[in-house]
Image (spheres, rainbow, N blue to C red):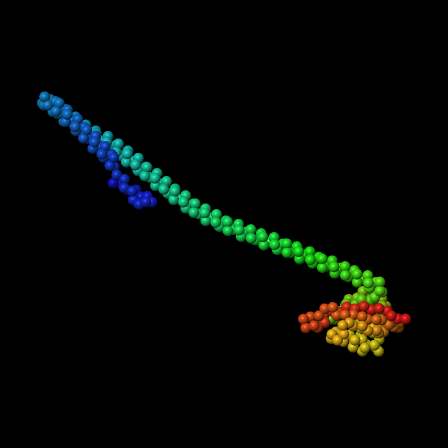
Length: 265
C-alpha cells in the first residue's frame, strides 16, 4: 500500500485495479487450461504433461502481464492524484494572492484618499496664502500712496517732518527739517537729541511740558511755538505740531510723528 498526502488529508492509493486484472487473467487462464484438460482426457498419457505445462505457463504469463498492467494503472492513478494536489495547491495560492491583492488594493485606496486630502489642503492653503499676499500688497500700496501724499503735503506746506521712535529714542527726518536747522540731511543722525541741541534755552521747559502733557494723554495733540537755532547765530520761530500714533497694551507711547513750520516774520 502506498500513501500520498494532500491538503485534504492522507490519500491511500492501492493497486486494486492491477490486482483484480491479474486475478481475472489468471482465472481465465485456469479456466482455459481446465477446458483444454477436459478436452484431452481422451488420451491422458500423452496430453497430461502438455496440458499441465500449458496451464502453468498460461497462469504465469497471465499474472505477469496483469501485474505489469496493474502497475501501469497504479502509476497513472498516482500521477493523477499528484496533479490534483498540485492543482489544489495552485488554487490555494491563488486564493492567498487574491486576498493579498485585495489588502493591497485597500491600502492603495486609503493612500490615494490621504494624498487627495493633502492636495486639497495644499490647494486651500495656497489660495489663503495668495489672498494674504494680495491683501498685504494692497496694504503696502496704500501705505506707499499715503507716504507719497504726505510727502506732497509736506512739500506743499514747506514743512519739516520728524518721526520719533520713543522705545529706542531714535529719529528720522526729511530734507526740509534739516534745512530749518541750517543743515543737510546727511548731518542728522538717528540718535540726535535735536530738541536739547537746537531749541532756545528759554523755551525748553515750555516745550518739554507741552510734550509730556500729550505723551501722558492729557492733550490729544502736541503743539508748541518756540525758537530754534538755524546755523551758528540765527534764531527762527517754528510751530511744532505732532501726535502719538502708536501705543502698547498699557497705553504707553511707542511712536510719535510731527511737523515743523517756519513762522518767523
